[in-house]
Amino acid sequence: MDGPLLNQRLLEAVGAWDPFGCGSDAYEVEAADVLQAVYNTDDARLLAARIQSIYEFAFDHTIPFYDCLQLAWRLLELKRAASCSPTV
Image 1: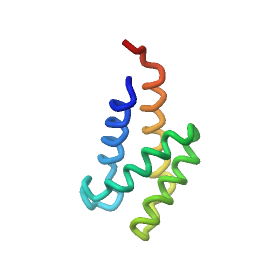
Image 2: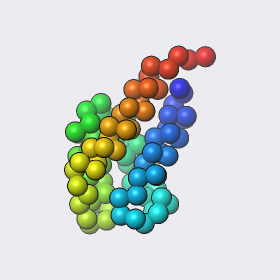
Image 3: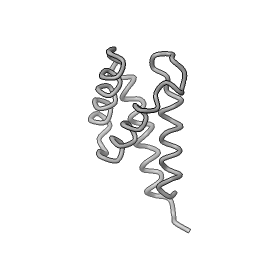
Image 4: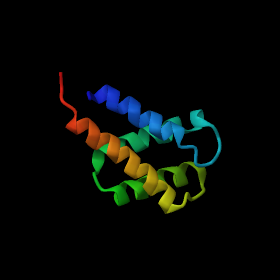
């Protein structure tokens, strides 16, 4: 899977995650920050902590760590799958 397709899939996964019930369009800036964080680590716990921090800063409300960890696992799963995909 190429970079743009992976980015699209990652952004779709983040967009589908609606931790505050604001609708998927409410998190565009945060989604971009999360996307960058995915490329900076392969550790789900570190990524979850970064996700929690991003959303807490933006919305002044803390998301439970386990919720962030579930998203982190999903995003890292997509990233790993992309790195294992054969290039054509």
